[in-house]
Image (tube, rainbow, N blue to C red):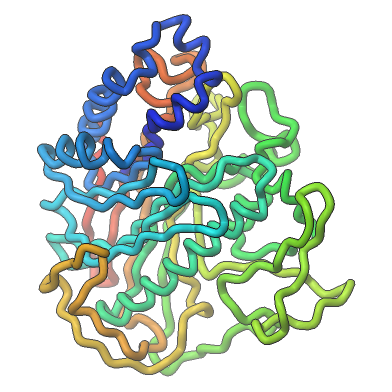
Amino acid sequence: MMTYNCLAPSLCDANMYLYKSQQRAHGREVIDFYTRGPRLIKEIAAQDCDIICLQEVDERHFTSFYEPQLKTYGYEGTFVPCTGTKTDGSAILVKTSQFTMVEFRHVQYHPHKHNVGIVCILQSVKTGRPICITTTHILWSPKGGETKLAQLMLLMQNMKHLIEQHEVVYGMNLPVLLCGDFNINPGSFIYNFLRAGRADMKSAIPKTMSGQLADKRRGTGLAKATWSVIKGMFPLSVFAAFPQIGGDTTVQADGWLDWCSIPTYSGTAANGAWIHQPSDSGYPPDTSDAPLIARHPFHFLSVYAPYNDPTTGEPYFTTWHEADQEVVDFIFMGELRNEARSRATTTTRFVPGESTLSADGLNPSLSVTQADAAPQQMTLLECLRYLKPPRASETEKMPNANVPSDHVMLVAEFRLSGAKGFCEEFGDLGF
């Protein structure tokens, strides 16, 4: 699968100061979409991925360019535009010979700014096994940590809801791939929260939560204090081993009940405080010594950690222009935490593979009225390999003659396998 921020022309034109040296070196055509567009399609098609996630795609170009061009390579998908005055959005496209799009949900973050995401349930054509694919483009503002966090929590609320519906349908867990442009740095407060699943918000300062304003190692985009920590991270397999129905379903009793919850930030980014939501939302009364806990319901590993070349040790970057050279794009692999699952008993009517999506992405043949305690079958998601980003010595500020965006694509190959030895590989890197 692939995730790629394509540099929307609308945003390129609005931020021309980021591409001055690129234009001096290569001329205006290096940022002109009539030049970049065909190169983007050629680069995307060359990887021959089964799943493509795109960010910064202008709405008019999705319908007139990306969608018809990629259809010739066997892809179909869905696009969600940003709200407000923004004209770009995000898309998920799949190779129809490999996956069926069972259901999708467009997630708009308004009033938490105008960014968007897509949550999509796919089903393998070969085996019928499902997987959840989610992509997003989170707010850029380096000082807007509380808004970035709110956007991610809203996205994960939608992921949890859709995943639980379809785990009932399929009788098995749904592995998750969450990808896109998160506008956070490895080792930052928000990154660590995504990885750990919880955080004490008392130490969170909105303007530093993304790591984008931290003192950075020259040319790496990684905060000095976090370098030693993230060097030790490396993705393994994500095992989804769930108890059988009737097993232990006790949820941790530590005072915070909503699985996609964050305290409210009150005040300005420079002068404010995190406060508990009202007690009727499941939070204890706000006291000076009460923990201000944020948490989410997923286990996540980052495919590209520890963000440096395993052979040379040279740090990775995923974007490079006049303002930054840093890692802001990610592919996270994971699963829903068992203790976060809803616990009702259920009935459903739906036969996987025998339905048609409506225009809004809803599956009219899916009707989940209650839910089983836990999936009865296990699915393992493994990352087999990923496509290494270019080293700084191999390229230059982007876009350039070789890279048609100001981000590099991230591409990884995964394997889905079942408890009975079934294996399926998708996302050929095309080495």
